Image 1: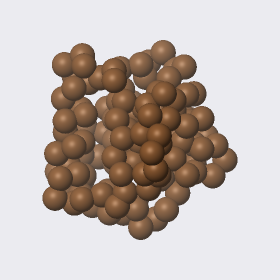
Image 2 (image 1 turned 90 degrees about the horizontal axis):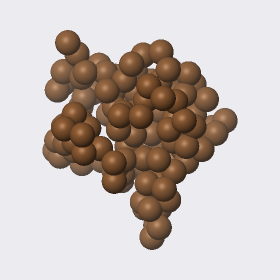
Image 3 (image 1 turned 90 degrees about the vertical axis):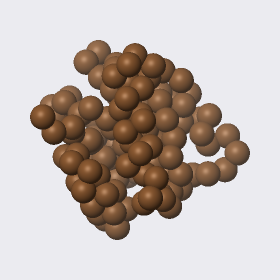
Image 4 (image 1 turned 60 degrees about the vertical axis):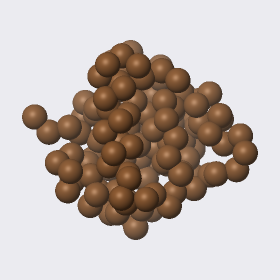
Amino acid sequence: MTTRVLYVEDNDQNYYLVKFILEAQGYEVVRARDGREGIELARTVDPALILLDIQLPVMDGYETARELRTIPGLAPVPVVALTSYAMAGDREKALAAGCTGYIEKPIDPTTFSGEIAAHLARSRSGGGSG
């Protein structure tokens, strides 16, 4: 069975890079272009992990993360902020909004798939919160 990753990202270049890296590792990547679409797809595509940009149209990543966390079936799904927001306090703000992880852009292609695998492993072992 293929592991499905929902990536909520409005920037095409960022999306294609992440998709290329993850598909090379055997993941299936489903894209949403804004927070509202991300929430709707999260309800229907049964993602194992959600990657969430913070600077999104319609509703930002913080608001999207908070809403995702109200959906009962998504409680165990890791939500990882994947963002260029890298100022002091941004990681904490993302975690407070409901994200279980935080990866800064630009991503490092040599370590990115390992970071994703680690988030998935933690969620499967029950250690996804915090």
